[in-house]
Length: 255
Ligand code: SF4
Ligand code: SF4
Ligand code: SF4
View (cartoon, rainbow, N blue to C red):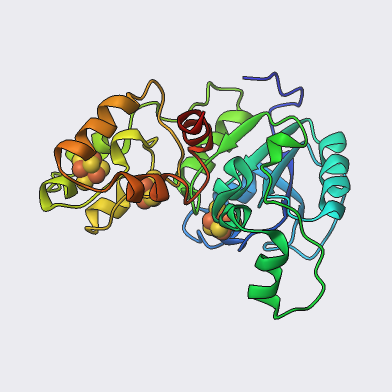
């Protein structure tokens, strides 16, 4: 973990949205039960969802969303130059997110579909780390409020902060869920990083991998499970591509 270079006490935070739904920022702003304690720890210098005041002297920048326009590149570089610590905040920022679905079709076609032929400048959805250096990624669509608070408090107090390394299946088993594979459905829980308390499979909905890959995952074994259960490999790949978190794996498969 990078040395943060600021004193324990109130840390100045800026939060910035790029191309996204702003759902991750809202997770923090809407958490009324802990918001007062959280605000006691941080000094909000720039956070559109929380305050109308704007200052440019922040220590930690939370960057939400992916980059999909050229003007966003310059804005992001300015934020990077100001921040001591830059956090890619949510799956759009960490991986390109759902916005990356447009990367699979010609950009003019994507614009025509959404904006009915208007001229809109756009570029492929690009993760923050492809443009500036990122100190920390907090994945999730949306992020987990508890996890964000834990990590930010850890940064402020200079404690060790980390994400779970194990897959969603561990949390799913802890919740005593029936495995969706046993119900004849695909689920990305075996390869996806835990930390969401297996919210989707607990609601009998497949994990779509919004938190990206767990560490040391065994992809061949996962693919074998899909084959053994006579489920569709193409559907598996489509699911892996939904948040773009498994892009490296899908690229490697193509080559
Ligand atoms: S990660 Fe999901 S919730 Fe967060 S900004 Fe992107 S689309 Fe919205
Ligand atoms: S339902 Fe999904 S997350 Fe739960 S145990 Fe089965 S594969 Fe893992
Ligand atoms: S179960 Fe999967 S898709 Fe659902 S929130 Fe967790 S990581 Fe994201």
